[in-house]
Amino acid sequence: LKLADGLQKQAERFGAEIRLGEVLKIEDEGEYKKLETTDGDIYAQAVLIATGSDYKKLGIPGEAEYYARGVHYCATCDGAFYRDKHLVVVGGGNSAAQEALFLTRYATKIDLLVRSKLKASDVLIKELEKNEKITIHLGTTTDEIVGKDGMVVRVVGTKDGVKTDFPTDGVFVFVGLLPNTQFLESSKIKLDDIGLIKTDQHLQTNLPGVF
Image (cartoon, rainbow, N blue to C red; front, side, top):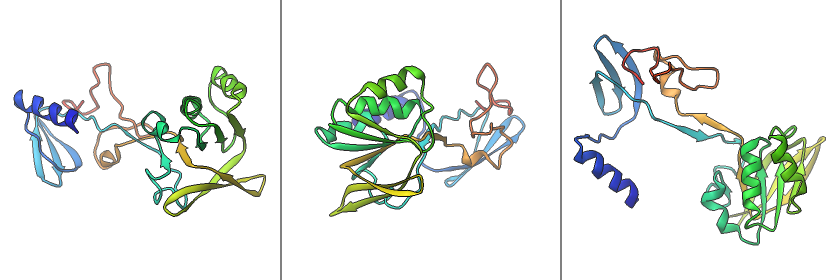
């Protein structure tokens, strides 16, 4: 909070005006771009979009209920809370592999649940396979996160049609990122199949003045 407050004050010293609101749409009106927001319309000659991405969710029972109380999306942020604990990591890509390996600094045992097969790099797969703290469960879906007394106690998964319980103290989910560009879907700004904004070599979108 102190860092964010300092960044805001520095921006304001350079003349920036901070306004709170959600941008709903960007329209091209020639020299000016019109931003429809929950705080009214704003007109600008240039617009910089920096909305970042959010973590993809599994969308299963218990995930939202136990968010930050056993369900996490950042190993470097929350891994230290699980020293000498048992964890479940969900995902099979590079991020899941890297974060699982990082979590071995703290956890004593990690069950890695991979929906189909590992898609991480060969180097990371070898690191996973030789790490005695990590057990890889291929072809295993993650169906439910179960808690007791307000804390996560197990994950229910399915492998080969058989339900399996994975006792755990916490769950770390790494199944990809989702660009925060949904508000542009009704605009003329071009997105790719994933939802990332298409730009040229100068990071300008197909709308001149929008970067």
